[in-house]
Length: 220
Ligand SMILES: [Zn+2]
Image 1 (tube, rainbow, N blue to C red):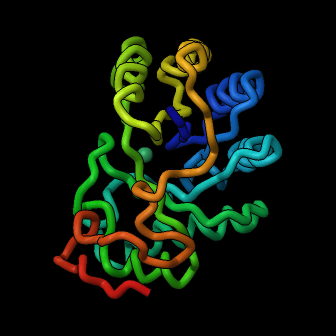
Image 2: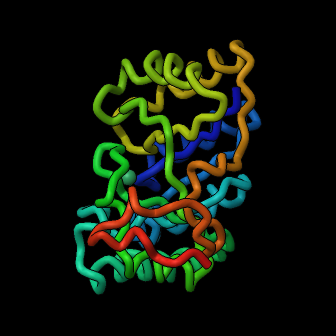
Image 3: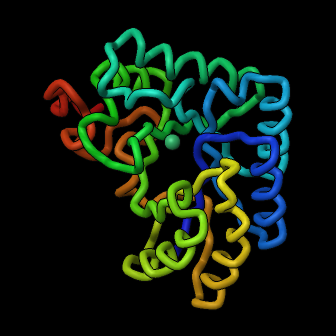
């Protein structure tokens, strides 16, 4: 089984360095989907630098993470994307990866709207979804066992974790160690079924992800 680890909602001054240390020890590369509001602070910029220096990818996970973009009007949703994009560009981040805010990991038409899709196309971004949400933020002790049970049910899991100070990441080392013992292969890339927009190209039907009944946006 393949596993892609992702860390959302950071960076966090206490937790992100702990996560980096564990990943380095295991030789695993991942993606950190950061919030623009956190990455733009002096401390946040330094943390993004450290993440990138370790060869992890850094993605755009909206500015405020307050409301799923499909529930915002076009102007507000584009502001969430573009402000974060400017911060990441300023930090020299070259990859253009976006992960929508799902609200407790849910996938649905609240994720995107037509304006967001147009922006992602124009900016040649990839939209990276997920297929495994062990719920580390709501169950800092139990997520690990649940996550292991779940990733064993499919050939390639994109696991959503959070570099937030919940205490959950204390178990990251055990999570990785147990999965390695089960023969897991950790990769940085994403399975095609989790990337409906790839470098600005719509490659999967978007109807399940876009509000306003705008799912029939032309593929390009
Ligand atoms: Zn999030």
